[in-house]
Length: 288
Image (tube, rainbow, N blue to C red; front, side, top):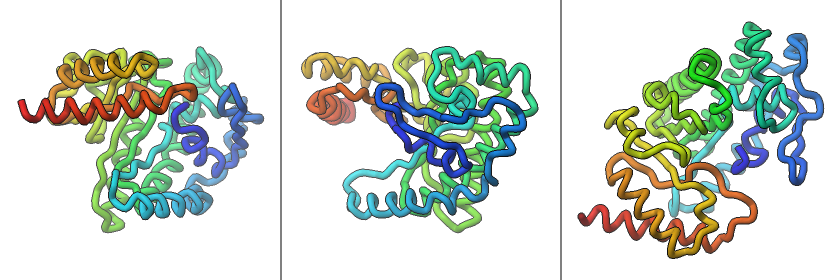
């Protein structure tokens, strides 16, 4: 979520939540959800698309300015991850308040997750209508859930987002776009994520590429997964790390990427070195 700033939280603003970005702290919700009755404060999720017209206008303008040089990827936070911010009031090292809801208020938790799913679907479809050529859903806080809670409170809504987005695009007569699911620290659910309706499964840097491929099979594309902190290394070492990563993943059904977002103090030159190394070693892989 850190890499996307306020963008992931725009649907929450449209639902009526106040969101501010606090320097050095990140997103903050001055009035978090504390009790079940707080759900009554939320607006109808169907209003989200109409409230976020300015986002779609920005996507269309960006697509025009890109002029086909690179694809434009739309994105959103996944329901469980968004729920954590709404309940915690911001970031948390434990997500204890959000997980308390799962244990003490399971019915209200499902109600909230359904509201978020119903808000995310038109938001993502609107991004495609506006010009996004792929969509990525970020379940950044998957690692705070073990397999049991993930399968109960995260995975069903991840699946439903993909299913509903694709259905609405078909109904609108629009071509489908690739969808990417990235569940940080969700290594325990790779097999389930590969069957959740997404063309691509993103990996963080804690997952071994060959083990990931064994989990997801040969028909799903993998994306990742260089440790973002590797960009603090020298440009020469970045090149070596990229080569090893590409060798481990192989040339088929793979998108080179970092295993999470960039950090504010990273040198843009080192980001460029990463991209250049990917291009260089990709060409060599294809030749061989």
